[in-house]
Image 1 (cartoon, helix red, strand yellow):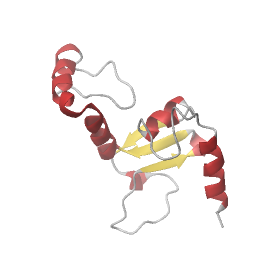
Image 2: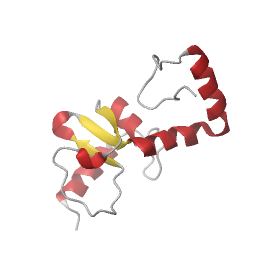
Image 3: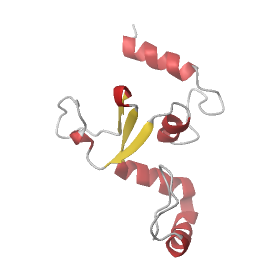
Length: 118
């Protein structure tokens, strides 16, 4: 039997168009969907254990993200987010970072997950 949370999640996910989520894999990082589809503010947080209202976790437990619906936010693990961006650009990342450093060294033009200047 599904919990109420699982039922709610299933209902929400069923409303997402197939071009965003096919029910198995996401073509883009989940934080992009949270931002563009649900209008949530995405925050990169270095230490998610500082999140308000987070229940105690075992010392060795990892945490990839935390949804704070009352605040209209989703907090994501900053280190994992950086790695997802690097993986998405693959072998092109280092070259793009050098271009970014040349033309936008202060990272003025950015979005939630972007290439950082080298």
